[in-house]
Image (tube, helix red, strand yellow):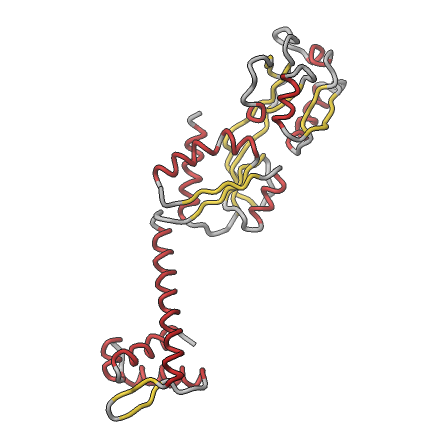
Length: 290
C-alpha cells in the first residue's frame, strides 16, 4: 500500500469522479484509476461504486478512507515536526551526567540555551558513574553524556575541563605550604570516595605516594565533605565534587598535581537533531569561558 494510492482514493471521494480527481492531482485519469484498482485489490474490498454520474463510496470505502485521512494527517504532522526541529523550533536534548557536573557545569549552559531556544527541552539524567553514562548513550536513552575521559572508542568526545584533586583537611589541622606526601601521610588513613573516578587517582598515588594509607568506604562526595567538616577524617577529592567547600575546611593542592578529565561524548556515526549539536556547541563555549 502506497501513500499515492491513499491520496488518489481521497481525491476521488472528495470530487466524486475520476476525471476531476485526476485534474486536481495533475495526473492522467488512467493513472488514478489504476491506483484505486490496485488499492482495492490489496484490501480485498471495493471502495467505490462506479457509474455514469461518477464514483460514490461503498460502506467499506467510507470506513477505510476515514483511516486514510488519519494516516495522511499524521504524515503531515510528522513532516511539520521534522521541519520544526530542523529549524531549532522544538525537540528535546537528553544529557546523561554525574552529580557534580549536573550541579556545577550544566545548569548555566542549560539556562543560556533555554534563553536562546525556549521551545527546545533539555533534560538531565543523573547517573552514578561513567560506565552507566556510556550505557545510556549506547542504548539511546541520552543524546549527550558528560563523563570522564578517556571513554570507549565508539564515542566522539570533546574535553571540557580538567578537575584538579585537592587535599581537604579538618578544621585546625592545616598543613605547611608547600605540603609534601609525608605531611599528608601523618594524618592517614586518607578517605577517598568509592567511585570509578577514584581508580585513576589510586594509580597516581601508587606512583607518587605508595606508602600513603587510604580507605574507600563512601560513595557520596557530600557525605565525605561533611565528615571532613566535622573533624572526622581528611580526604582527597576533585574540586567539583567537593564544592561548595565549607570555610572551616583547609584546602591544599596535591604535592604532585593530578586532575580528572571531564568531557562530553556522543555516539559516533549517529544522526541527531540540530538541537543536540546546538547544545553541544554552546556547552563547549560556556565551559571554555570559565
